Structures are given as C-alpha cells and as structure tokens.
Amino acid sequence: MVVLLLAFVFCTCLGICRVSGQVAELTTEDIDAFLLEHNSARAELQLNLLKWDNELASYAASEGGKCQFEHSNGPYGENLYASSPAKWNHTELAADAVKSWIEEKKFVDYDQWSCITRSDDTCGHYSQVVWRNTEFIGCAIIHCSPEMGQWPNLVFCEYNPPGNFIGELPYK
Image (cartoon, rainbow, N blue to C red; front, top):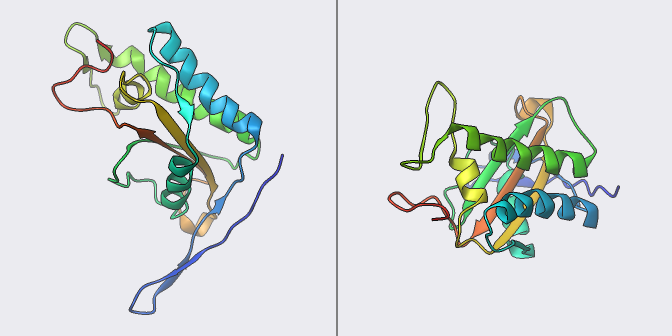
C-alpha cells in the first residue's frame, strides 16, 4: 500500500493558517474497490457503469483535505463518509464507504421515490450512487489528525454529471 502524506498549509489574508489532512495516494486496488462497489449496485439496476476520473478525484482530495465533514456545494454530486478509528487499509475503507451509501436503499419508499425519514435515516447517498445520468466518479481518502476533528478517516466521492435533482427519479 502506497500512502502519500501531504500536509498543506492554507493561510487567509488575515494571516490565519491551518494544516489540512493527509491525502492518501490511491492504488489501483483502491480505485477498483470504489468502482466495484458502485458498479455492482448500478449493474443490479441495469445502469451504465461508472468510469474513474482523475479530475474528480483531485477535487475530492482538495475538498476532503480540509478535514471538514461537510458538503462542498461544488459543481459535482458528492457523497461523504467518515469513520473512526484510523484505518490504513484504503481498499477496505473505500468498500466500507460505498457499502454504507448503498445500505441506504432500505430507507427508500420506491412508490414515490422518497426517503423514509426516521431520525438520521437518509437515502440521498444511495440515490447519487445509482443516478442514471452519472458517468464518472473520482474519490479521495483523507486522514485527519485529532485536533482537526473527531473523524480520522474521511472519504469524499465526486460524481459527474451530478444527481439528486428534486422532482427527478434516480433511475426510472
């Protein structure tokens, strides 16, 4: 497993600086794990298979490297995953993240395609995984230090074209 540990320093015009997370250099096996889990869910629904996009992966690394577990509100569809304790097997972490999003299908009301909401239940990550028009994906795994937040493992995946448009169904 190859890990590239990058520490970036961001400074604002006020001179306030902070260190970002360590972005993992993904191996072929890591990328394959992201694609396999996504494409297995998509194949069940006879949807096109996603292809890896390095530009999306770079964007995911840039956003995830801030170690803030929040959506970027950028130009792409986006799924986030956080876990603890620190996990250095990136192939397993990639699979765990995507499987957690796919598990959300149990919260879908298929008659109206809406999420059955109870407390923190959601299905928006799942619908992005199976969004019919999405063709490309790029993901990043980031390791954050304890002083940067409670989650040592972050996974950001970006999707293009994005999905989850109100009033549209993911794959019908």
